[in-house]
Length: 262
Length: 376
Ligand code: SF4
Ligand code: SF4
Ligand code: SF4
Ligand code: SF4
Ligand code: SF4
Image 1 (cartoon, chains in turn red, blue):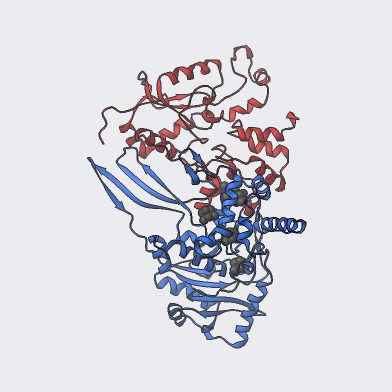
Image 2 (spheres, rainbow over the protein chains, first blue to last red):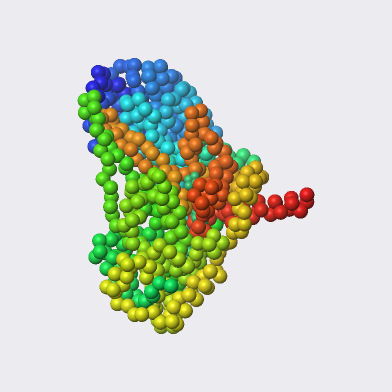
């Protein structure tokens, strides 16, 4: 299939660790094919060259944490035909959304020598709270093969194949022995969106929920399960407050068990 | 009764080696990651010698036994389904050239498996999957070739698991049919031997290459006793009297809501069930758009995509999805395939993280029926 013009793709960064963008650089084998099919117009992590918008596709990493970023994301949306968020920060607010459960001014006064210089928002929020997002790719970090799949789907005009069911399904297809049932380890797999291929259980540890809530999350039942396994409220709060702490089903569940809310 | 011989541990080891020599990939129980799973076996050294399991709703624990038995446990997280109906496989690939494209069918993988240690409930599960995959108009070629090539060394259970209920489902613990060889492990005083029932010509040919003796009456009696004792140890039971009518008449029973509060929709129950056969088909293209692949993967009625039609999911609530799973296993399977879809292996109870146990749930529905009958 010969295409006349390569789609122009831009990669943007907000509050994040760069890990998701690096997943794109990490696609060694696929990168060549990717760069032949798309024109990378803006990707500070990879090159300083900047090609002006508008862009066919924007990949957005990171959450919104400052008034400046809250404005910048609107400009990016206006210059992008399609916009896809990549990773837990952009999709759910990220690990930095832990501050959403406390008063951010207290942190600022403790951490910074001159708090007056700090201009930050009360909360770390996902991109979708600010603009319309066309697709959200989960993960902390994202899975590089899923990223290639999403870009392929975009270029070929089809729906990305990124199932939203539980991580347990991937775990069982791989033949991994369930760490929760066989070893009594806490595992968030039953409430977590698939995508990583059940990486942690396969290495003998419980799932941390990096891919956020699955399509029909029953967080309450998992909490009861963790209690039966001996966890107290504090541990349950910690379990749900990870990289996707601010994703609604996880947020609500941790708030139910957080003493500070009662 | 079929012809019976006895072999000792060395005889069993010879069997594994003989089967390997006949071109089989020998697979069976082995210990990995705190459980007994089904994987490649090289010799009897790979078998879970001296191990057993404790099972309950949502709990599995690997434990040591006091003896050297090789089959002293019940079924674990794996089933033979993973070999006969692989969890993920490519169906075909396609490449485009110019305005045309070419479909490349997948080469049929004709691996010959020898299954060591197949339990009675599992033999029944395979017979049920046969009805789904090969005994009808539409045949699954991968299942068919693997099934026809497979060699079955069954084992009569010497110990029932905490969640087993084959006696209620009439599927065990004694292996009745479909095997090439069926072993019963006997440990008495200083003697450790296996009574081997020969079920096929292939089985007989194997026995000839192993050190064996004609089975004595007392040995056969010992073996029968082992199975009888197991039948008396079932960890669970289920009253199946008119179970189809019971479930069909109670589709709106409040118990389904109660279960839905606990159910995680995680699909573990369907993945571990040896009779569940559902799969999904996923199409992928590479980034150039000139190469496409179609994959088949195990699916479950617990996912939203399973019933996604134009405009949304048919079974959007967890309640409707759990009800689908249970009524399919115990009721509509009978309409569809002429038997129950459950063989009482207990895996869906053990490997359900919150331990939802339908041998407890169905009686709840039944009891409320009896009560309301009494009241009216
Ligand atoms: S280990 Fe975790 S992800 Fe895997 S089946 Fe068990 S609960 Fe699910
Ligand atoms: S259900 Fe019966 S046949 Fe199956 S493992 Fe348990 S005792 Fe053996
Ligand atoms: S429904 Fe449960 S007990 Fe019955 S065959 Fe399936 S996994 Fe085994
Ligand atoms: S219970 Fe669900 S997954 Fe299993 S065979 Fe029936 S529809 Fe398929
Ligand atoms: S019944 Fe248990 S194993 Fe099945 S989906 Fe519900 S919680 Fe998961």
